[in-house]
Image (tube, rainbow, N blue to C red; front, side, top):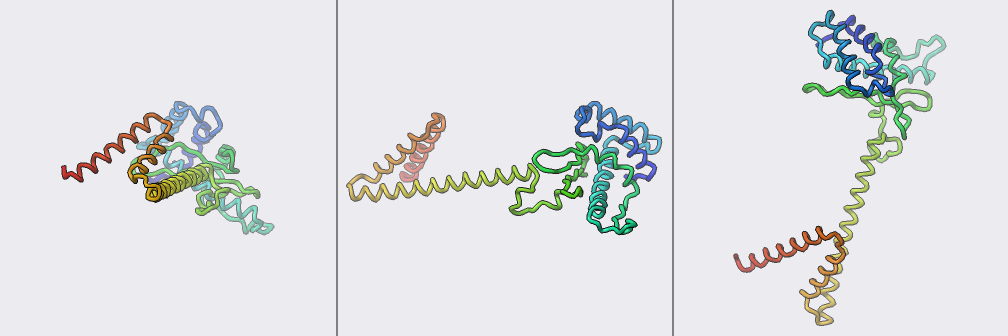
Amino acid sequence: MSWSREQCEVLIDEYQRHSCLYAVKSAQYKNKHSRQNALQQIQAVLQPLKPSVTINDIKLKFNGLKNNFLTEYKKWNRSRRSGAGDEDGDGIYKPTIWYFNRMFFLLEHVEVRQAVDSLIAEDDTPQVGDEEIVTSEYYVTEDGSLNDITNTLDTGSNVDGATPSKRLQFQKKRKRETIEDNVMREASSALASISSTMQQSFVQNVDEDEALAQFIVSKLKRITDTSIRLQTEEKIVHTLFDALKKCNNL
């Protein structure tokens, strides 16, 4: 659905009037009733210009305008602070969107995420149909530039500069790999112990089956959870009976 410039101007102005839709630290931002009421008011204002407009149309359009603005702001602010422009400012990046200045009200309401020096432009707009709404994440560098996190994150081992969610995923993966390594080492150690016990049985004239049984019993004693131990014993019994059936062709 296309939007005219006049319709977009009204949309931006009306959004600015309803801070509960973008002031992420305000109590009203977390109030779904207030947000829904604000969207209904915007819809009522837009309907004379765009009769078929829905609340989802409004949310989709504003989210797109917002992301375009933040992208342009990043480019503009980077060129302004890098000293690329001359004294007349002719070398500073010129935004390509006509509504660039109209959306500066969003910048003071972005949320500072703890643990990382980042700015997140938030919007809880849901997915509608096959269209996916993507909210960009940004962080402020030491020189004040606004950078896109998704374009600057190192997909390799650079975890220190990652967002909390990325860092948590890395930690979970590392913990899972550590657990798997420990399990493999435990299994290898168990097999080596069984082999060693069986080899000793030949020297000491101890029955191989008895040595294996003693090993299994010693491991079962280490299982302190009664439920898990009973389940393990049941599996062992079933395995033995299955083997007997196969041997007897039952």
